[in-house]
Amino acid sequence: MKTNRILGLACLAALAAALPARADTLSDIKARHKLLVGIDLGLPPYGTVDAAMQPTGSDVEAARLLAADLGVELEIVPTTGANRIPFLQTHKIDAVMASFSVTEARKKVVDFSIPYGVISIICAAPAEIAIKDAKDLEGKTVAVTRGTGADADATKLAKADDKISLVRFDDDATLITALSSGQQDIMISAPAQMRDTNKRASRQLEQKFLLRTNGYAVGLRKGDAALKQAVDAWIEKDLADGKLRTSFKQWHEAELPADMPKE
Image (spheres, rainbow, N blue to C red):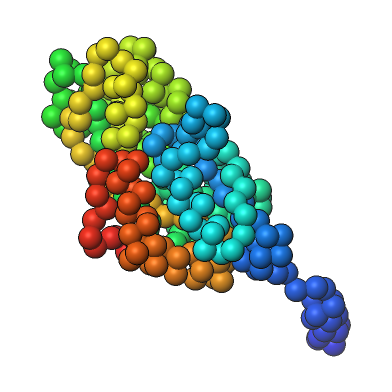
């Protein structure tokens, strides 16, 4: 039996040696001369389309800077909050750049670059709705976008207090439509979604309380060490030379912190 086990292991080793080595993602990108990036184009100001139906937004601009730094073309693959990770894991994309907040849960299934931006999660509602903290959400329905960091934060609140109800929308565009039309009154999301809602609604939302502020980064497949090293180097360079900071200020009407979060 021992001899058979040794022979079996030897055969497996020989078979593995005979198989062609799997190129890393960075090598694949260089070979095809194209970077495939998943971006949510229904999430202004991170991703949207302009009057000519061309992709634009802060994540779009950042992806273009990354592709230029790698010396390849950029191909944008439209994603949503719910399919960002599945698209990455099934190799439909090389990276996610879609306001992808760094969380402990996501770190279990994907790797992250160092952050290239920051995002806050807030609770917002019209002025006449009195909300100071999570306790004031009892008996109310809160709108969130499915699969986002805001969804995770809202879910924690609802689990801690079963008097808080959540309604989930598949993307930010439908969330914003529900809020601007008056179908929903309260949201947990980012300030950008509040601003976009207020551009379309007669009844204005205001920030009620802040849940958290953290970095968002480029999402990568687990173990893509060479690509992570290249992306980290690009972020450090373009933060230092001001390109990423200028783009963030243009799109978000705010400054990036002088000391960016490490993750």
